[in-house]
Every structure is written in C-alpha cells, then in structure tokens.
Amino acid sequence: MAHKKPHLPEKICPICQRPFSWRKKWQRDWSEVKYCSERCKRQGKKPSVLA
Image (cartoon, rainbow, N blue to C red; front, side):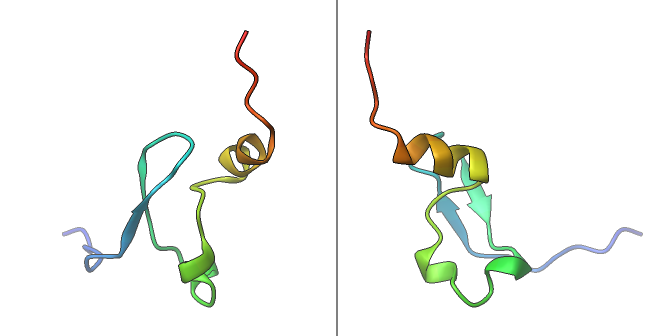
C-alpha cells in the first residue's frame, strides 16, 4: 500500500498558471515563494516582448 502525503499548501505560479505544492526546501520561506521552478523564475524577470 502506497504512503499518502497529507494535504500540502498550494500556490498558483504567475508565469505558467499551474498549481504547485509546498516542498521541504521552501520550509523557511514559503511565504516568499512565487514561482514553481527556476525556469518560471527566469521568465518572470525578463520583460515580456510581444512581437
């Protein structure tokens, strides 16, 4: 039988609009986490250019 994790807090990434869950590495600064990944974080810092 698989071990189920308890319900973890979730946020929505402002770049990709996907939900992401709390991770242990974010334990101390969960309130400041905005992006689901480094990729989205890099995209968020660039000014969006619409061609």
